[in-house]
Length: 272
Image 1 (cartoon, rainbow, N blue to C red):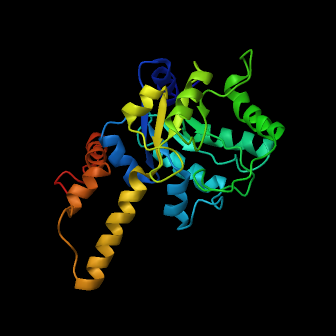
Image 2: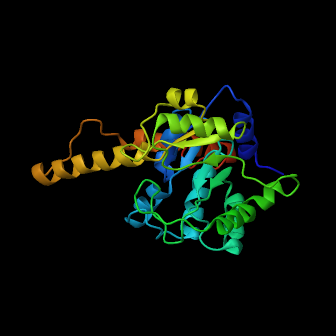
């Protein structure tokens, strides 16, 4: 039986008049902010997760367990909001791809994407990528799809994701050629693809758009500015500073207090 989040994502994709926009998140805080903004779905970015958890570049260094743990935490913040998760190359051959899909499903992920790079993969918007032979990639898709598509007459993925589209015309042609299969656009600022707004992507025919840098870019910029200010002045810049209560409200304070009150424990009945 499909999870509520997976069922909701299928319903969203079934409406060809709409596009599903997914901000890229990589931890609990970025996910909470995106959820409170009211997005219909979230995207767990592998680049952001690698940078956040490991402090390293998106060069295939993160493991299945690290990615799956993060994906599960994000997916369970709101089990009715679909999370689309980066699964890199599936972390190995066909058996490992099968295990990856099972682990992601158990974690509560609504959808995932697999790449056709060799195992020493890199960010899709970097150059000089090496692709695996077609038979190997097709075996990956088969291994990843068998759980949800075993009853289908024709084996295939649910969504097409062509990385690094170079022009709007190429993007339009891809969407037309693959219709009615939903096509995903990866909106990477400064990447190989043209910069598209949600509306522009929809007009070209895309049904899904992900923004991997939604949280990562602004976070790095803000932290860099704050670190420079603290180093140079010896004090924090108070502009925009959240109080502890305001910060905790972003990450579920009221939900936690409601659970405590409903349980009768009364640990926080006098407030926090």
